[in-house]
Length: 173
Image (cartoon, rainbow, N blue to C red; front, side, top):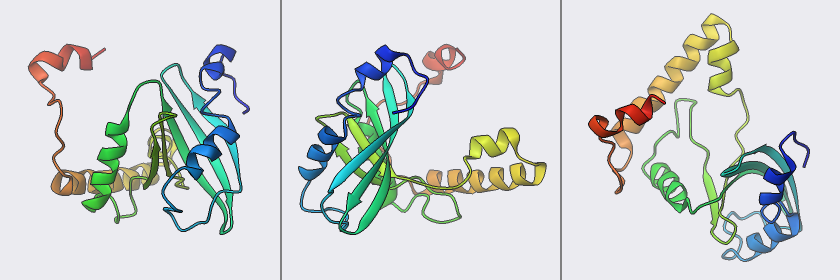
């Protein structure tokens, strides 16, 4: 757990970042949902801790080999995000055009953790801020295609609708 976060921030996430606790929660999932085999061990590396959320990398050693996932822990229940991601994937959003959302693997409500596919490659934000002009144009095209596909195919989710007449000021802060 190497990071430059304040010790109190890391202490907040100690249970989530404990490999034994995470492994126990994974063993409690329905019988091997991914076909990888039961986790034999878990390694955790903090990526970005915050007060309200913590992003970490979890490497599972299984009978099928090592598997790396991204974990996102939240201070409050965010099962809505896991449900939305599952609905997007089921609708076929972002599964082609070379631009996709990470596949959601599991939601561990006892820990407030969502586990997602570990996606390799450049981050669009980094390319847009630091890439060569041709790379920025290509990334913008891929993001635009993904957004158009999302607008076309994504299921309409129940929940709060953004009212610009009310929320405009909040969005500019």
